[in-house]
Length: 270
Image 1 (cartoon, rainbow, N blue to C red):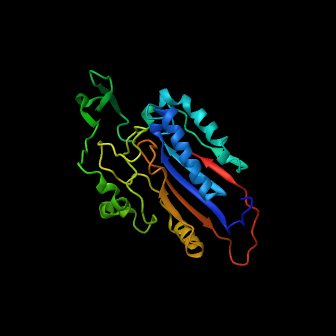
Image 2: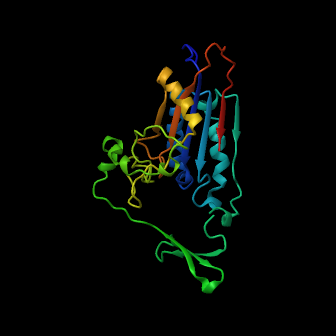
Image 3: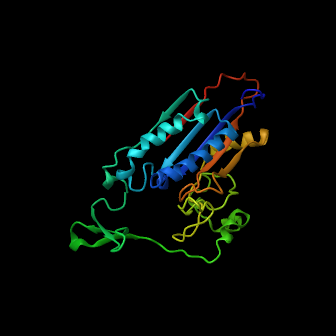
């Protein structure tokens, strides 16, 4: 950046985020989310950035999809993005294909059960189309009301990592850097409670960045040479929706004896 000597290598920022909550309250949550995201971009100043978003358009995707274009335009036109000379955005806007969103009950019919007082959806029941309409799957809200949430925040919850078995089935095939941030889900969606977990599920590390063996080697090489690898979450004290975004920032170092190539800045939003 201007006024400072450029650090060696190509800076990379990878971000994964479940943004479904943002489209339920765009006036409050989106502003918080974008502000914290821009701060991470400003801090790490990546040459290449990839942002992967789940539930883009909201949990009620058909009603909230109108906010998507505004969100993308605001993101790409921001001051934080002005340093980039190109951007690619890939969106799945086919919100009418609800039956294709989830590979479990493709031949079932869905029944919605709503609360009598609030009309809120409280249960989904999937029944076979034939076979006496046998119930194949039921989904409803959970309850996990633990009396002391500090156990999940104390020392970033690292004492609980021994119970995290997510990667065990991918041993020697997928890798992850050491986690040093608290469980990323399920946070309160109340804009005033940035550190509070909801009582719907046990807090867990649901947002991760995994690597192939070759990618791990590339990332760790930059760590050994420059100590510039950061694996963390975004917005620890701010409401970012029910998920805290997780990012991996590192530098790809030039090969020995090879000259520095001209580096284009690029942003990818998925």
